[in-house]
Length: 173
Image (spheres, rainbow, N blue to C red):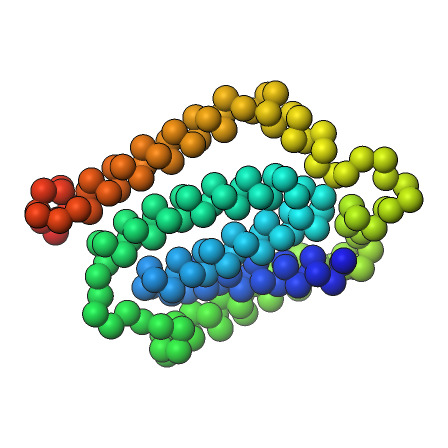
């Protein structure tokens, strides 16, 4: 399981580099979905299965709104893809910076010394997120409803701003 979590962490770094290095919103949104997916996979590996499911659904809703907004505003006929020279230069530069920062900050940390929740089979009484679900609904239920309402409002605002017939404020740009 540790190898899967390490693979998810590596995928998270690659997804974040894909978001940061690509100027076209189409490919950056794909990197954002990848980063959200493997980030939720890291949460599952550490025992937060329900929390990662809720976060992934919220991320997908938010990213759908952001992608629709950015795709409507940046309608390029030929967007830069991951094979272009400038994007490859950014990817190599960002991965080099991440490697340097990881090498500088990882002194004395050993990746195989931490254990994820599911490897304590005989010693664990509860699943890692069973009490967290109860707390999320008892203390954070109102905040979940507010966040869902804000995402719905954001969806309507973006659709109103990007609709046709030159009625939106940003269509004059």
